Amino acid sequence: MTAAEPWVVAVDVGGTKIATGVVTRSGELLSRVVVPTRAAEGPEAIRERIAESIAEAIEGATATTEAVAAAGEGQNGQATGMARGHGQGDGRSSLAGQDGRGHGRRWQPRPAAIGLAAPGPMDTERGVALAASNLGWYDLPVGPVLEERFGCPVYLENDANAAALGEWLFGAGRGAVNLIYVTISTGIGSGLVIGGRLYRGKHFNAGEVGHMVLLADGPLCTCGQRGCWEALASGTAIARDARQIATAFPEGELYRRCGGDVTKIDVPLVAEVARAGDKLAREVLDQAIRYLGIGFSNLINMFDPDVVVVGGGVSNLGEALFGPLGEYVARHTERRVKEPARIVRAALGENSGILGAAAVAWQELGDGRA
Ligand SMILES: [Zn+2]
Image (tube, rainbow, N blue to C red; front, side):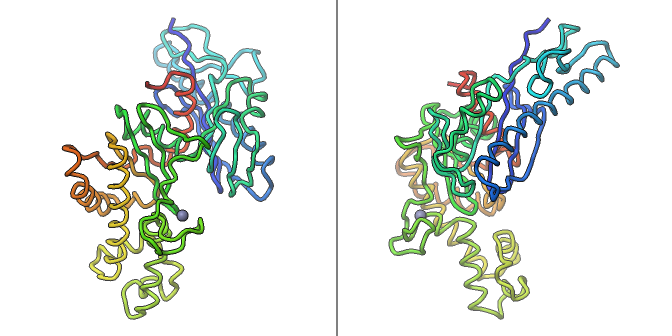
């Protein structure tokens, strides 16, 4: 009879959706539930929806593993799943282990922990969301409320930090001691794993790399400063520059491709037009990649990491981004280090949020590496 395996529930809370899943120690996703956040209904309503999603994800994992168990029994008489508890618990928050038949996997009846990732700084010690403006969460206790409800520890983490841990434990950064995760989408955020631990800073606010100023008197940033990295090289910045150029050159390909509605211009369109040989689109992209190169070189010079993992929508540019970026960074860091840090694309894809939240839980439980 094999030992009952532990599992965690992972919750990825964003401004538009909440994704929740049951995740094993090795990063297997046993269930996945996605619901709209409906932030307009208020902070407590979101927290309640999270609690419902957790219960639903546990229920979903129970159903999945029962089906696997039934199939296994049908074939060879050895159950491999997570059978529902017979009369134990309330059925909505317990996964009872199957009772020792065969050599199948057995599961602990309750989650070992819940990991929750959300935007903004999190007081990871008190389980309080400090300031997530798109959720309306200001000093909102999330951890204690869910702990009471589900009877297990709840670990909160900032979403970029969680994604960094996820890539480090399950994804492109496995085996690294020092890892920088950078997400490039509407803004630029990061998570820093230093010496095998997340570096959070005194106010849980470390890793705000998007607001490094790289161009004095540059374009205005949402934070009020000018010339921040994300005002120069995020997806928002690329689209903004492309729209300006399209407006200035209405005879150009960018303008033609958006049918004269420049608000339709986004990063994939700029990349496509650039790939087809349009000089203006190419210039917009090259300039953003140059600023990305400057920012990554600064980070590598500062932290000398093993690996830099890049996620977010802009990383979907693939080789069109990673090729020139790698060359730029090699040229600007080679005098300092013999072997420049690898810059690689994030590996966890659409599940990076859930697996990041799961990695937070596993690391806090002491089952993560390091
Ligand atoms: Zn800024």
